[in-house]
Amino acid sequence: MNKEQIDIIGDNHISSNVDTPMRANAFEKSNDEKIKNIQHYFGKIMEELGLDLTDDSLSGTPYRVAKMYVKELFYGLNPENKPKLSVFENKYDYKKMLVEQNITIDSACEHHFLPITGHAHIAYIPKDKVVGLSKINRLVDYYSHRPQVQERLSLQILKDLQVTLNTEDVIVMINAKHLCVSSRGIKDKSSFTTTLEYGGCFKEKSFRDDFFKIINQKMI
Ligand SMILES: [Zn+2]
Image (cartoon, rainbow, N blue to C red; front, side, top):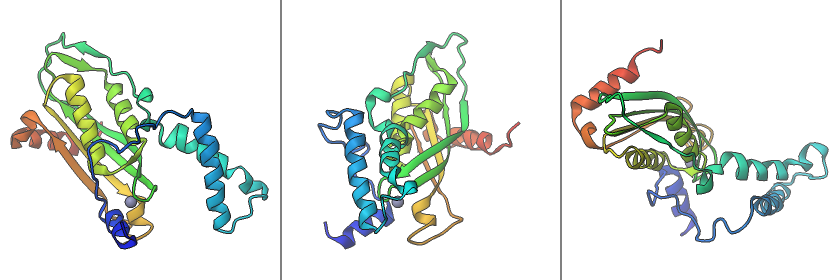
């Protein structure tokens, strides 16, 4: 790929796959080994930029960045960190729409490694299974904490919930601001991006309209 193609893919935020592209040996090394290696390489990046790593303020930065990448920002790359989504029998026989909205999105763009921040709004119509509400937030947090493309993030959350809840009737909407759009490139500070993915009954307009009506109402 030449440099022009690399820029085009980044600025158009093109994603190649629903699954996050991972190496087969992604988790052969321990977290400590990864932190040690990233610390080394990030130090090199800082040195190339001309920074003096003997300065007290900068000397710990390579380690801080490495630890932040492995344990915080990108913990969601490792399937071992996936939250357990315990499901319960739908004993109430609740069969209407359940909406969990304004779930915080803290992610990073895989093309520039810059923050993506915003909110997810999710609804499903239970069949025989329901899930604890906070588990939906935890699932969003997990898939957000990897280098992402917003379209893929929406799809990964949707597909996971459809399997976990054993129903196609799920809708996922994400509104987010991309720092790589606001701080570089076009430098647009006000625009944000909305993605919408759904299946089952949400293919019908009336169900989507009900969902939009609910998420547009003011919070109590
Ligand atoms: Zn980007």
